[in-house]
Length: 94
Image (cartoon, rainbow, N blue to C red; front, side, top):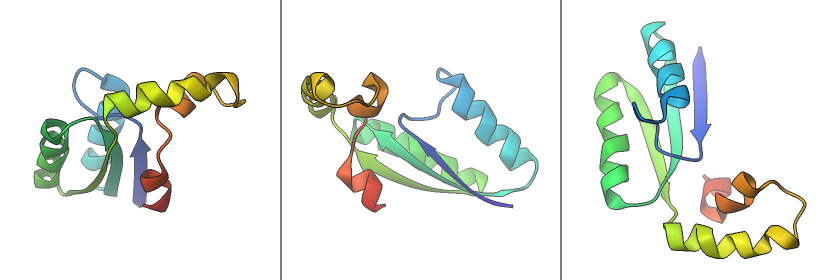
C-alpha cells in the first residue's frame, strides 16, 4: 500500500507510538511518506535520516514559541489543546 503518515511531532525512539508504527509499515514493505512538524533544523535533519530507509519525508518548521503563542487561542476555539498547539497553515497546504 501507499501510506501517508502525518504526525504533529518528530517520530523517534523517545516518541514510540508513531515511530513503531512507521517501523512496522516499512517492515511490511509498504510505500511510506511521512509528513511531520519539527521545532528545529536539528529535528529536520533527524527526519531526513528516515529517507535512508526508503521513506519519503516532508517537514514543516513550527518553532516552539509559535506554538506557545497559539495556545492563547485556547479560550476562543473549540479544538483540543494539542490541535491548537500544532496548528499550521503550511502543514495544511502540504
